[in-house]
Image (cartoon, rainbow, N blue to C red; front, side, top):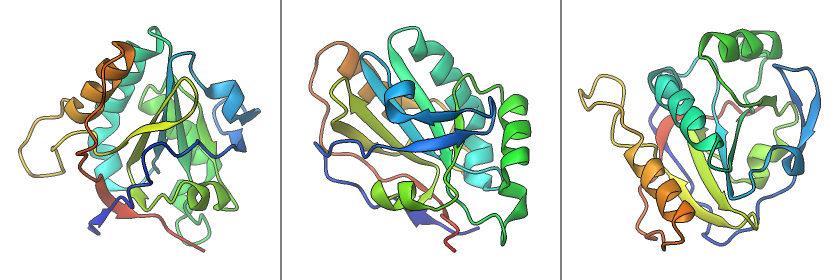
Length: 184
């Protein structure tokens, strides 16, 4: 199991725009269409990574909790599906249904979006404010497959709560850790 950390895009970075296929609805969606009124969580994930499989229940739970509070959620898979066919768009749709995602699961075939966000691993989490400026990038929480620490989403949850309550978010943020993005 590879253990690749986030690259930690600089805080304050404006969210790079994108227009990608939503594998769930089969519609093309843009950042403007998926962003939330108060903030937006963008997650780089995939189907097969053990780290993503481990956090799926918590990201599904977080989305359900925070979407009603004005936070948009979107997941993007940028893996090379020729080398990793289990991450193909038709299987992404199946995974979204199985994991009970209430957010779009987009396919970044060209990998240009992952490069624009300097994404390195799955899962990789980014939280942008209402103006699409980066306020948090890093881990969901300290839980990893087989480390015995329960999933809580504490790190991302704390950032979301601070954003929604108009409080500052500490710049001391831990990188996410997971499988490397499978580049072409």
